[in-house]
Image (cartoon, rainbow, N blue to C red):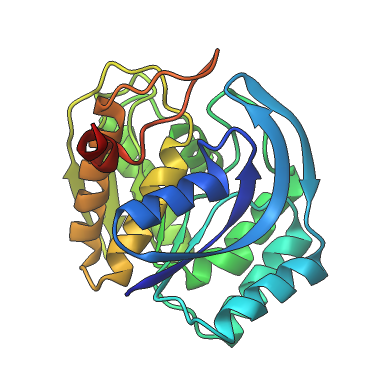
Length: 264
């Protein structure tokens, strides 16, 4: 069985972060390991507080995984300070990790800020150079490229700027009143659009975590990057179509829609 390590924060409501990654990777047929960067007290309405792991404890978690079950892919989500980012980079370089997908989590769906300002520079300097793919949404891409994004043409320009600046593949995720649900992948001086129908579902808590961990899963299975992105897009579309409605704010998706249908 293919194996995937998720390095991310814990979400107490279970719709994003480590919990969403475990559900996604499992439902897409791979085995999940985890290293927790932070504990968050949050729900569908927002983030109440964050308790970070220490650099030493995060290092121990990553060591424990790589010295026993070597992952075929690594997904990196919320990392909230430079010290933790440096630990992750050092360990992944040491173990020569492959198929690294980074969801540069900076802002929660609710609008709550999840990363310190000084951590962005460390993230781009330490982790981006070893990544296979990064998956920023529109607000995150604006931070990374330094420009406003108000159209699909500007999405392409932003993806090109980020890809050129950091030498990586970039998937800029659409939405945010720019298009239906179309994402653009840019790398090696070429771009490719991934289109999908927009699902009328306000419960989108954890969509970024889910997409990036699904991509990592399909890379672990040996798929080319473009196909891995398409398979992940298909999966998240079905999760949204299932229409799960929990919580008083932006609720979680139904990651296990396949199994829930069979159980009826």
